[in-house]
Length: 195
Image 1 (tube, rainbow, N blue to C red):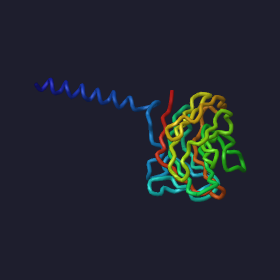
Image 2: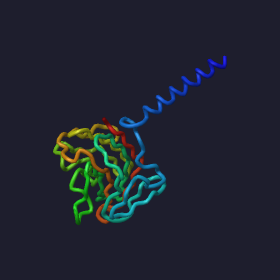
Image 3: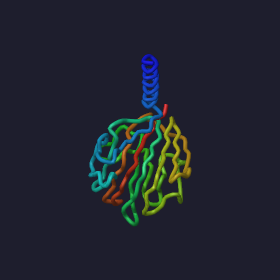
Image 4: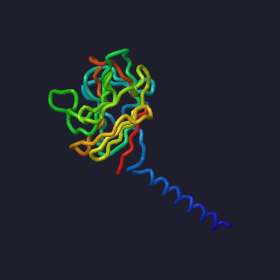
């Protein structure tokens, strides 16, 4: 009886280790924002705070940038503009530097500007219309793999595009454009790295 309990314990432990090992590396969905701190992020030329479980952009023209670079991934996030009109922000991806004298990278940006929500100016096919809910939380799901990208807005396919260039990996950042576009809130930011 003692031997079978020990054997059973070993089998369960092995199963748990195998299960936990499967959670590491590509394919694991991880929270980039824990809802309590800005750990894992760098604040550049702007002000941001954790407020009621959200990232709140409060001042400046700059970035709330990941500390780590990413190549192929699925990025999920929710955002809400706090102005009634003329809101403007964005989420940058796959860039490695911000040019001298500028607050933001040259490309690639998923736009959150009123009337252009979801568009990526550097990708001709990356345009959407009519999928955003004004004054409410909106959920974006951006998939980036090799030279291709696609976006879902509030559970609906917005676009699929080809033509991403270098770099093959880079930072992800929330754009603060508070003087020109007001405050924003961001929450539920998750990333799944792809092979």
